[in-house]
Length: 599
Image (cartoon, rainbow, N blue to C red; front, side):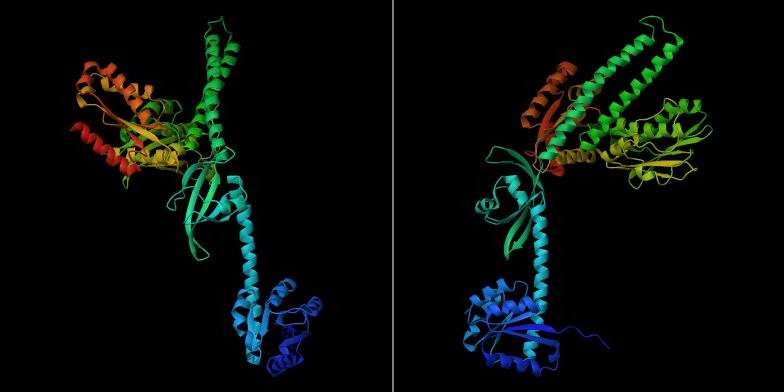
């Protein structure tokens, strides 16, 4: 036999026997009348008892009962039947109350004397489904509210006049106020809907909270508002301080005593302190090798920390990439010969040059070439290739070694990765070389990857953009703007421009050496030609920029002598965000200043 849906249980709370009989007859007239089971009660109290016993699906409620009268009957019924849909049955004279009753929670209302059977059945089924939908919506709303309340970030809804309409627990923690207090006060923090900003909140208790602020437009109860998200950056700032302290500690507390230990071992090994036996010499060499390895590890730790923090200094200049690869191949040809390896190079016929940090690029290539020589067996081949590729420069370091397992490739550029073949004694690396290489390449807006199969060697590729001076300085300014944060923390650039005739007799080289030594706090130095430099000084305001200019001018006078008095060097600062707001406006301002000085 086919299964039928259980009948809909309808609890009719009506004290008038005549009206109750009419409603009963309406159900009997329905073709689907067997789909309803009718329950009756004459008072709200007795209806409560029937509901507890029979668990009806819906309530048909008369407003005027012996124990309750008028609209308050609905309010009491909602408390008694919190999860049940309620349909109000009203008299003719009460019809105007219908819409108000629905606003107060009734699913529908029916006017006595105008009810038909089909209308009644439709209203019951509609009200039940509508109640289910509303309950699901309430459940989702409760879940969303719970998520908002438990998220650690502050979430606020702010009207256009600054009035707070909603604030979660995270906002209470950030501001140090209860929700009721936040709703009474004006929201005074600038919240830009176009970008993320950073600011500092000073609470009434004197505590300063660094904040990241984001905002989007929305409508709240049909009113245009802003959804403001507040993130407490105190933990981030603490990590940054810890990072800076770590860099300082490694730079001074470890490197200094290590240098002393290394020098002492070298003095003893050289026989300065007396004759050294062969066995003692071997022990001392082990100590020196490990001291050198520890020093390399310290350098690598400092490099990877600076790269990850985005504060690795960059010294960019126009570099002949073909000449760089050729020199590298020449420098390592002897080592390759000693290992009975063939080292070849393949360079483009036309010159290929770009603005890059040549020392760091050499560091990357040396790391790849050293690994290739280290893991390629005797009689194998290592090949260096450079090619122009769709407006970029493509390097390849290829070897005929044992290759790399495909499962290891995703971890290859991670920190402390030691994968693949075995190195010779004394050649163990730090495990940071490829991670540093990847960071350096990405600092140049490039890409590095490897292609390899076990037993078929491997190819390490580097793809670097070929950019002119404007592209290089634009990228450095963009990086510094990102580092300065959405709070638009200041920094400045200092440009030193010297006439070409001062570049002779090694004076330009002396000026360059002076810049590197005297401006070590610069996040970037971009060299344009032989006598033009632009420095980026992080955290420096306009006054700091002027002091840097004075320092450079004094140094130039010492290098060039009387020539500087005749217009031999021009130095000018540009401050962010006072003089420019982004990299494009910086390029424009830089060109204007150059034109003004040369006019």
